[in-house]
Length: 548
Length: 69
Image (cartoon, rainbow over all chains, first blue to last red; front, side):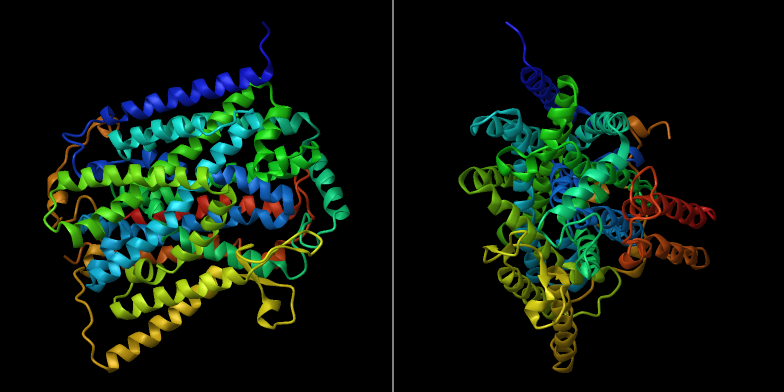
């Protein structure tokens, strides 16, 4: 019996993925804490991750498989406009230096594991905190689903059909998270980056051996000149910069509101770890830029997506140009890159539920052990919810919902991000702004049709995230990212309502944070939360950091 | 505890972070093909280059603001 290239690919993919998941299982023992039974340990890794682990974890949770699959797919489809993910990722790093250090400090000082808890303390309203938590959970769920869509795209390319392979992968990955908490994705991220580094080297070699980038861009340029779409090309079309810029800014702000991005930050050991990571994270942008340009390379190589599904362009390219074993490694890298953010997202969503809904409304006296137990089960629920979602509905729905999710989560920016600098906003004004922004965003998304390259309308609603300004009566071909318009409406409501509520002397919430909390560090903080007292600043350094 | 948020003079270095934040934003200026680098149009290599700039500036700011400790 001869072994086909496909069988080698599937074998390497399955073996590596299996090895990774075993690693995830043993993560509970990695730098073993005295107990995994508190949210501090299960949900934010004991706030003990050093420079390297934090870097891998942040890279693993923010640069998702969906990014590595969908960004080149978009570049393959429209060219320059698909490249927005790169500048977006770049500006998040210096912004994180300014924003995330404050978030880390105030969370460390008060023992927060989510941003909703910060909102509660800052603006003195558990209702607002619950609203922020629910918004975060709703925005995160479809994000988990699109990770599974990415995994499904790989399996589709490999010819693995049916529902059970995806189900098995999700069950095993969920069990890892259930057992090991944030330690599982952290350890997996390190292993994943070894595969990713291999993939990057393989891509560089491959492009060099097949005529270099000039051949790829020449081929892509020819296709874009010959196709009917006015929007596609090696450069942005006339007026296209407005949509590009607003998408970059909106996505960058949204990252600081997404619950899963915060989880990795809070797991850092001290302020300097967050700052060093802000300096080092753009390394991933280099990898992302390279992978994004693979879209052009795929055009030059004449790659055709499987069954017209653009998400299969990258997996199909690997299959056509890499040797089988190397393609198997590439698939495993992307596969693990799907399971890591899915794990972190489910942990983040679970923490939001436990701290801002369960502990506030259902069981106010919940012990740390009970909190960890509730979070574990909710994380399972989040993953299986996402799985059922994509198995029962058209995967296209989860992609649409993810698009909506970005617009939704952006509406928590005034409370979660601007709140780091000011407590001027009134709690009810923030709630009203959030709801107003959500309404505006959803309405605008509903009004955006999806058009075929020749201008025909394929789908009447939820066809994209950029609103053509011509639809608002402007005589231009530019488009603006819906999320930013909704955020502007949100902010106007917040400011107007704050002024009004103050004039009416409606009592504002009491700010439980002090200015010094925003600069607190691992060595100087005086933790007031019982959990922070347990494993706070006096905790001895263990494991990988003992030598530092 | 005044020492927590202290070192205001050194924190002035953080304004340098505006450079990498603003660099990828003037889309109209870099939306062109030439000059190319290794066959890559300017539009693409400029933006990837911004990542290197971000690392350099952020590392510099981190060093300058921590030097006094």
